[in-house]
Image (cartoon, rainbow, N blue to C red; front, side, top):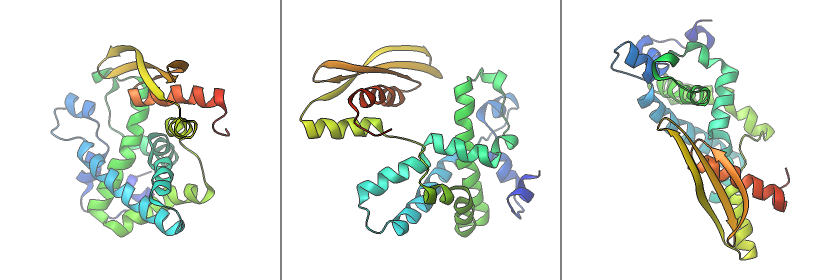
Length: 223
């Protein structure tokens, strides 16, 4: 289905939406001077504002820290990939996988990027009210049902360490791969003793994986 028909968009700026779905690999292959990255940057800010306002109004008794943690669940990469998949946004993506030899994980992460770049285009072209309606339809139902996209195991371990007066630390054990596709192996230590290891495409992701192992061993969170 046509993008504009699908999302009820009436526009005189179709070029803007073309940019919103153009990955840098496609731009490089076709010698274009644009990609979705600037719109992604804008869309990220718009997304955080709209979700923050909704959570602020929905949970009037929550403090800043509680709202921040809650928002993180609905704007994390896992959540954006889910929304993007549900909306079928990848059907409009222009990408040259062969050009940059992108990995499967990178292609998946791009689906999160275009959720934000599309939102950035909507905001510029249609304004905040339409952007809020788009986010309302795409996200608010998951907030209302309390869907979990992300568990912050690292924060859970920090809170555990503070409560038990023990030191929680992390160390990179291995790092390998090319710059655009690295893999990190991290270990988590409790008072100097290794409690678990985790792997990820970034240090933060590997730390979360390691913390998850420790959380499960210690029963810090109810899974």
